Amino acid sequence: MNWLDSHCHINDEAFKDDLDTVLQNMVNNDVRKAMIISSYIKDYEYGLTISHPEIEFIHSLGIYPGDADDVNEELFNAYAAHYSDDECKAIGEIGLDYHWNKENKEKQKEVFVRQLKLSQELDKPIIVHSRDAIQDTYDLMKQNPTKGVMHCYSDSAEMAKEFVKLGYYISISGTVTWKNAREPLEVIKVVPLDRLLIETDCPYLTPAPMRGKRNEPANVVYTGKKICEELGLDEEAFKMQLNENYQTLFRL
Ligand SMILES: [Zn+2]
Image (cartoon, rainbow, N blue to C red; front, side, top):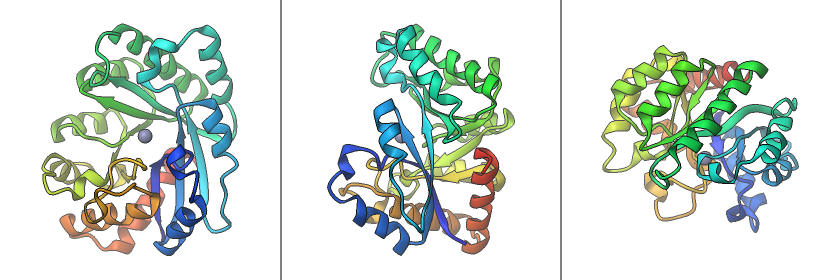
């Protein structure tokens, strides 16, 4: 069984010069599946052109909370038109981010809710970004039920349980390997294995042994192995579970 990266941005500028090497590193580390996340339509269209014979890519598009202020009807409709694409397996990353901007909370909420509703209508899962906004994120998701994953989950184990109760998956990033990781280690202990995913969020959040360098999908193995070590899991069984979760959530 192979590893997978449920959230990467290899369509980012950061990979423009050496994408071939990055893809080869994935194969070398046995990372054979990845979800490419786009916050802009041009990145999504570029993402669709990325391919490798030994890697299965899927795609997601969503209006990033940090861009809420730029959203007008025309822009919203341009995104929405792509959400029903066969290639678009999820809507995201969407959500709330009060870390970078708390002046436009209402606008962020409005854009998030409209995308939650589209997710319900189109029956497509969401990929949720929430930073310093977990209670509002939870409330809106509870009021607008759909399916999806809490990406790069970085809040408490208690809240993780609540999202699991709503039916969501919890995705763990490289932060679980960091020296100061306390919460992610608590989170992996309370999330049922059939609701867990792993991701890099590359080029960000590089796992411990590579910290300081640009992150890439091949590094997801450090996150996976760390979780196996912490939970005393058999690697093969864990990989199998991750693949099952990924296929179920994104309906592959
Ligand atoms: Zn991301």
